[in-house]
Image 1 (tube, rainbow, N blue to C red):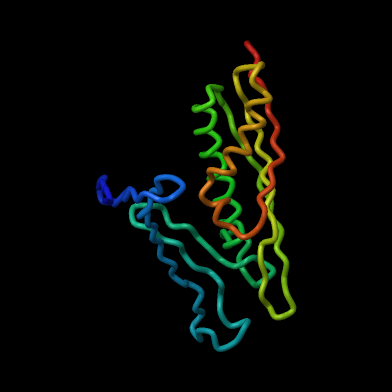
Image 2: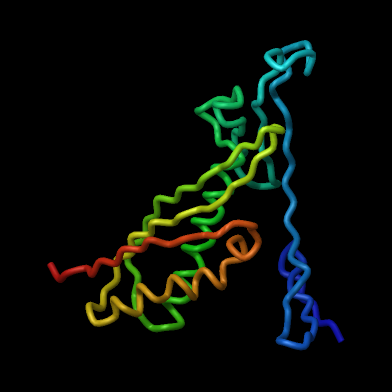
Length: 181
């Protein structure tokens, strides 16, 4: 028997029993991509069109996108590879904050500088081969630094995006303790 609940305009949580656990399914996401790089002659030649586009979702600010500058894109716009790395960093942070709550230590600041590597192949294809997150987390409890460091592994195992990519996601965390003023 499936159970579903509607929250606002979004359909959430059809619970389906599985052999290993209860699996929550039926979350769906929709975005639109609109190409804005037609300079008047369409794709009549490799240098004749722009890579600019907008990423849109109802009720949200548009994201100005383009290709990486190596591929004739606009460096002032987000490229797809950066958006994948940003999604990994966001998802890890949100998973980490959840783990902190469940494990009982207090995060008061979190910043990350995420990087990724892309290999290009002779046939023009390519793939991201790895990503590395460098989270700097500030906690309140000096006696919980080891727990805060270990929580990154749990956050990685929970992160929907890290679980979905076909390359390793490494973590080089640093934990600080906020001192009393």
